[in-house]
Image 1: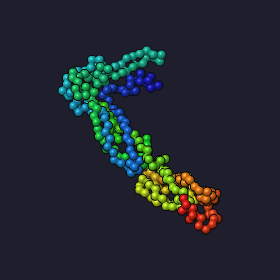
Image 2: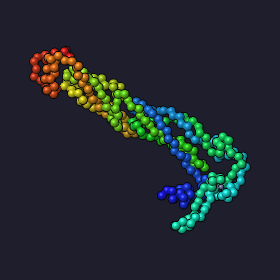
Image 3: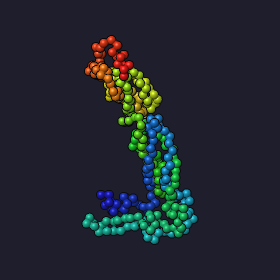
Image 4: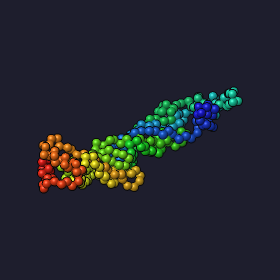
Amino acid sequence: MQDIFDQFFGGGGRGGRGGSRRRQGQDLQTRLTIDLEEAYTGAQKQITVTRPETCEDCDGKGHPPDADSETCPECNGQGQTTRVQQTPMGRVQQTATCRRCEGEGTLYDETCSTCRGEGTVRNEATLEVEIPAGIEDGQSLRMEREGAPGENGGPNGDLLIQVSVRDHPDFERDGDDLSYNHAISFPQAVFGDSITVPTLDGDVEVDVPSGTQSGEVFRLEGKGMPRLRRRGSGDLYVQVQVVTPESLNSEQKEALEAFAEAGGEEVDVEEGFFEKLKNSL
Ligand SMILES: [Zn+2]
Ligand SMILES: [Zn+2]
């Protein structure tokens, strides 16, 4: 459909003097990789992009200001050429941007040597990017008017920055929530203990109750990622893995089986059973 439209109306309905119309510049894209810590706190980052910028020597016109000019003989200064065609739908007037003057209607006897008549040059620009706290992997930031220059005084396009968040060695992220695996010893699972768990905001103490099973999950409310441009934070889920002793004597085995059968509940055992078990592991 678009093709037919372009054919009949000449370049997507861009009427009038094709090349002299104000047009917004193209949006440009770049990538930026940050750490999970930076996504947690938010950050100010510098990026360097190579992008087209308006040629300063000719002010984007493509020819020196003092160059001699003449009206384009190809289009009589109209910037576009018109052709009438017979089609099954009747007579169709086909309009196209003039190739000789590229739609400007004017020819110049000199071309800007800096930009070779393009009106733009490729420059390296260093920009400060504000990374909002809570940004997720794959999300894009838009920097308005930092894209390619517009044509004929039109505004610049935008610069889109696609943000990648590096995987963290300790934390797994799921939206605003984080999860963390923590190994605990068998005695810690059996008798309970206070364990130190890292968060992106420093260490916290977590009480592991006696009789904790391997794979049990503890939820630390508000210790996950901040919600992007909203109040509050996700949670941190700590999953404990009980490290089972590699070798046990028969007495220890029997004692632990009795404990396992009770599922961490009170067990009816002889005096000093737990003390003995704890010391023997
Ligand atoms: Zn022309
Ligand atoms: Zn130039």
